[in-house]
Length: 68
Image 1 (cartoon, rainbow, N blue to C red):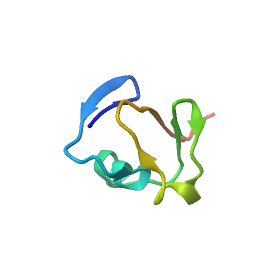
Image 2 (image 1 turned 60 degrees about the vertical axis):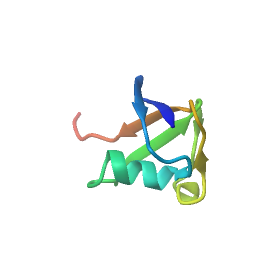
Image 3 (image 1 turned 60 degrees about the horizontal axis):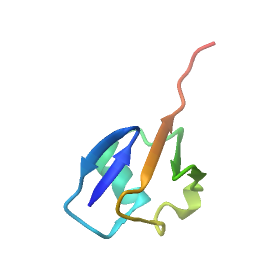
Image 4 (image 1 turned 180 degrees about the horizontal axis):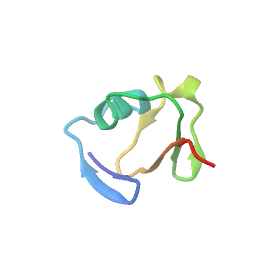
C-alpha cells in the first residue's frame, strides 16, 4: 500500500492498516500529544483503532511541542 505521510510517499506491506497500527510503525514511542488528519479530516483518537487507512490516503501527523 502506498501512503503519503507528511508529504512523503511511503510503502507498506499490508492493506489492512488502522491509524493506530500506522502510528505504531511510524512513531513507536511517545504517542502522546499527537493529532492526525487523513485527507484533511481530523480523526479523533477514539477512532484510531477502528479507522482503516486506504490506498493513497494523504496523512498528516502533528506532534505537540513545548515552547513559548
